[in-house]
Length: 110
View 1 (cartoon, rainbow, N blue to C red):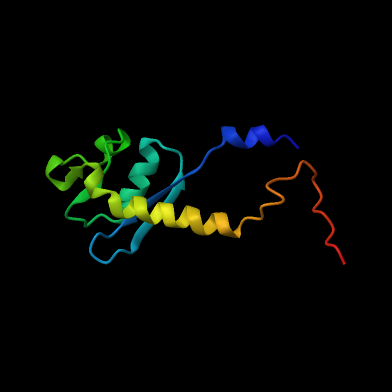
View 2: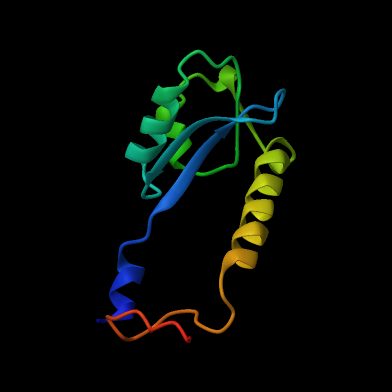
């Protein structure tokens, strides 16, 4: 099993996050392209304002400049959520076995 082959197929988690309720409204898993941005925006079509970073994929999807606010100050809540998720998931990961080159799982000790 070649571990390096996984790096070629990266998947990004796109989240639509409510600034008011602090809850996730939509999720899409895909690449970083325009198609993935479109799929995410299609899940929440009635938003009044989209607060995004300056990623180029949003330019083709959100055509009205009055419905888009660009800037890091608008994305602080989602960035904080992403950081918290990385910290929680890191705690769940075992420190002794990060990955295995073997195709078989190790037998538990008795």
